[in-house]
Length: 291
Image (cartoon, rainbow, N blue to C red; front, side, top):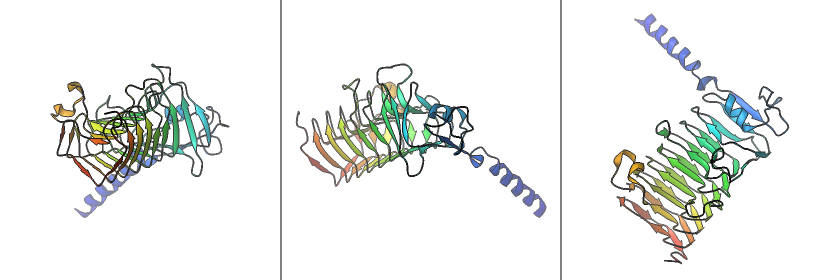
């Protein structure tokens, strides 16, 4: 019995060590690199797109300082991938806002446990970052210390992204192409979303909202300033086809707390079709100016 358990434990340990994320690598990208290189720190790749094409589950892509102009949306389809600037440096990825086919987002994520951090994203015809549920709900995605600005529509759009964490980001100047539907952060049908300590400003429509059957969202310690519609909404007006699990309420058991909302055309805080939603210890100034 003892030997059998020992062999089983060894086999389990070997399986863990050989799992894709346990064998994760780091790929380096530099403006001075070449896409013919191996992607090491000494021989970096030249483009984020090439790095993502080579990355497998669990890999980290580190971008050296500089501006990377893209002509096609960067897609993250493998679980556990991290995209970030090289430590102590800051990389910027820029996309045009006119291409409605190839550049709908700067980055689109189709996988779970993805991290995007410490980068600047500008442009794209729709979104700076889109968390896309094309292959089903995702979980455990983190967007941290990312500056997203001058997007065609929303800064961040999330669909069925459970446990998503958006923290310490700056999101600004949405709606360059379409100012009629251009939120700062738009979360749809997610369970357990956390949005905290972000600075969301100069937004064409609503600063932050959760909707489409989102449950257990926490919106806390954000500063939302100068919006064309509302500041923070728990619930909105989603079409029936977008409601997670045919939910009857837009936002459920969710809270907005300790936020500061300044200078909104419509409500500073509000709920549309919310159920058991709460607003706690928020500060609102100069709201509903156009109401």
